[in-house]
Amino acid sequence: MRLKGKTAIVTGGASGFGAGIALKFLAEGAQVMIADINGAAATEMAARVGARAQTVDVADGTSVAAMAQAAQDAWGRVDILVNNAGITHLPAPMEEVSEADFDRVLAVNAKSVYLSARSFVPLMKAQGSGAILNIASTAGVSPRPNLNWYNASKGWMITATKAMAVELAPFGIRVNALNPVAGETPLLKSFLGEDTPERRAQFLATIPLGRFSQPEDLGNAATFLCSDEASMITGVAMEVDGGRCI
Image 1: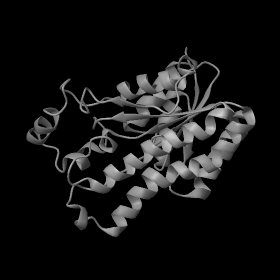
Image 2 (image 1 turned 45 degrees about the horizontal axis):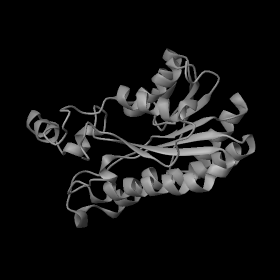
Image 3 (image 1 turned 90 degrees about the horizontal axis):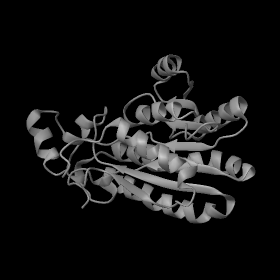
């Protein structure tokens, strides 16, 4: 029960890595808000596991502010914020990615971190504590061809994590990131281009431990970084990648 008494919000929490993190947080005693652009999925999962649900578009400031207000109304404080919601563009040469796809990737993967900081940092400063966890990617450390603007958005997130950590440390707020390798999530097909046994085998050949990241892997790492056990850890971008970035 490492998170007993803590309140936590997980964006993109209704599927994939976000669901793995939300479930682990619940198992460790936290009160959890599952926030997702798919409100029906968030509501269904929340009812099933004993969490709160919130429909949110993390790229929209009004929507993010409403999520923060809902958490305040429910709990009076927010101890943990996980910026997990993310998207990618389909694999393509960098100059062929549409402007609309570029804008959407940067809005969801980068601007969302700014918008959540704008809404939640004042709350955490007022309470004198907090843990923010940004779900970045190995793509921000060891980029793959044809995912250029996704790679760049995750590199931005890693740098933002370190900058936030330095600025917010005096206020008792820790900020860290996780860098998963591609995993068994709804985004896998987008990363691979096509989800075939051959493409999976090619991808897995680049991961020394020989498997994809699982939602449970991210849940375990997130629980540690957001718990008091990690009270001296801030500004790290921990790879959960089976050795992919070695």
